[in-house]
Amino acid sequence: MEWLLSLTPDFILEFALEFWGWLPMWLQVLAENMLYIVMIMVPLMLCVAYVTYAERKIIGYMQVRLGPNRVGPKGWLQPIADAVKLMFKEVIIPTNSNKFLFLFAPILTLGPALAAWAVIPFFDGVQLSNLNAGLLYILALTSMGVYGVIIAGWSSNSKYAILGALRSAAQVVAYEIAMGFALVGVLMAAGSLNLGDIIARQAGGFTSWFWLPLFPLLAVYFISGVAETNRAPFDVAEGESEIVAGFHVDYSGMAFAVFFLAEYANIILIAALTSLMFFGGWMSPFGSMADHALLGDGTHWFILKTMFFIYMFLWFRATFPRYRYDQIMRLGWKVFIPVTIVWIFVEAVMVVMQWGPWAVETVAAVGGA
Amino acid sequence: MLENYIPVLIFICVGLFVGVAMIALGGFILAPSKPDEVKNSPYECGFSAFEDARLKFDVRFYLVAILFIIFDLEIAFLFPWAIVLEDVGLFGILAMGIFLGILVIGFIYEWKKGALEWE
Image (cartoon, rainbow over all chains, first blue to last red; front, side):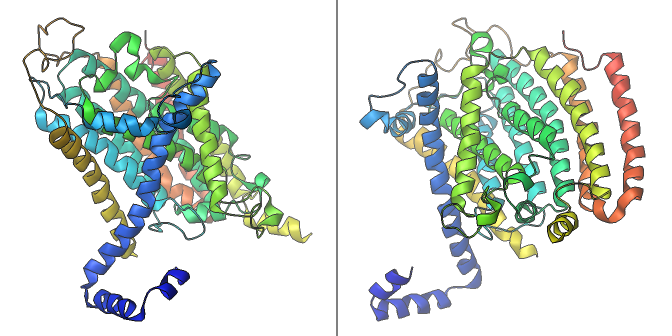
């Protein structure tokens, strides 16, 4: 910013300041926040576009093919070409559908998937809003996804869509419980709903992150995240061999693209949350080198960890065969919920007895001795 | 503290607006619109739809929804408890232990009753 200010002539600067001061208060707040939101949203949209590219490329290589390689050098422009194609495709609105809800469903799916990023801390203090109820807000917004699915399935008035919506809703709802329990475990360890505090509690390098003491909850959370986003191997909602595409079978063109964007935005969100809550977010794995430019704390660690978990999503899809529906429900209700309840009890005892590695006093005492 | 929520509110509005703008721009300005009867019929593998799609559905989906409400409420109760756990100590564990214990008994009951079975 400094060099930019020194380049601009003084009278423009003065005019800009004058103009800024002259604006009403609410407009100032709005303009400032809009700037930050654009700064979050534009990279996020680019990420979404290139995660779709990465998915096709990585799965391609895993299946010993090349993946997209025609549009642009090595296929790098493929996502742009796809976006342009979808933009010029007709949006078909079926005659029997409920037209308002039919168009509202993708919007309702995309909105929360983007809005959840408002509380994600990219670095110490670098976040749009430092909410004290940050995790609660995230939980609320990720729960909104199921409405989009149900509304889409019901409003398109097609048998495949409604079957897909029912399956998907029951699955999302079942895994949300396991996910919620896993979050309770994180809260107990962190003692705060504030995402910044949750990361601050994990200070001290690789071994003091929550993944170690909360390992069962990490596994439950991440697998539930895969199920929540209806990704393989839990993608019965859109199992193309049975119910073609599930709840969005009747969507085309941009309405479909919005669902698609929301799905990938949710994948990135789950990956980011996993790295925030269990892997220390922007914390460096080398606790003793926190001030080093490259190996120390920084946003690049957050991005690296998030990328790793996105890669896990793609890896799962290339590796595992699809679960049967009764197996999915059994895993959610009969494995994950008991596991999380037991671990919450174990953890509660550990927290109260100050046994956990997260107990700040214990760490300090050991360090002092 | 409440001013922290203004950016969040703006972000939610922007998030919804992005969806609206994309569908409006892509779907109704750039894209062609040539509807015909067959194109606008619901997808049914080439058959024309012979009845309304809003069918009766399996009661187990309804059961899952009811179980979800119970467990989700339980999580809502656990959230504040988890945050103050270090302060309430052993008493907190015992109180929540009784509460969770009752729910676990209910959970075992519905497990034995077969409410969680899918054929």
